[in-house]
Length: 253
Image 1 (cartoon, rainbow, N blue to C red):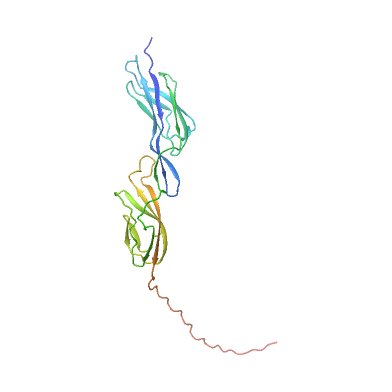
Image 2 (cartoon, rainbow, N blue to C red; image 1 turned 60 degrees about the vertical axis):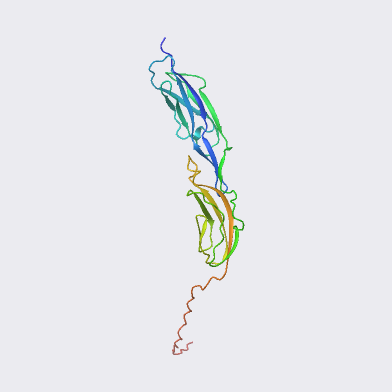
């Protein structure tokens, strides 16, 4: 008898590792942080100096159409080396995937030769932009005069990756820079806006956005006082005196 054929088995598959995040409009997103994969093992007992063996790979289940660049076959290296097949699915896709090694020439299939995993929406939420952002007492509702600056918000930025964003319109003359007020108010009126704390250290892995926001606070600032002299209004032009027109009268009929 000739040498025994290599025995090919599968270990897995292992589902993509995913996290969720909620944007500032309250929409929950599911994104991959690491892709899924399955490991292929080859046993060359009784074979001398084996060559790579090409093994067919099939997919089934509701996620089969959501795979990104699925391979139809996989080249198994010689004995003693594990190899893997990437199983990346579209972010947010839910369902079940079964990976099956298909029979072919030059090898035999061992047990197991197929495996499955299921993706659900039960994943950890990294950040929630709609979560309440604590502010200093009294910072969320302030009254100031023209030429004045509001009190501090009490938000701390711990590193250069943190930022405080504004959603809405600030009182003219004021800006937020590194969570601190810069400038003074110039125009009376009520101004309502949101401040949003965002972080750049938690995102950027896989399909997760580079910056994630994790808290929002509603702020209202009323600016009181005069607006000051406005632009002058030019006087209305005066029409020149009319010039009489004299003509002869003609009667007919």
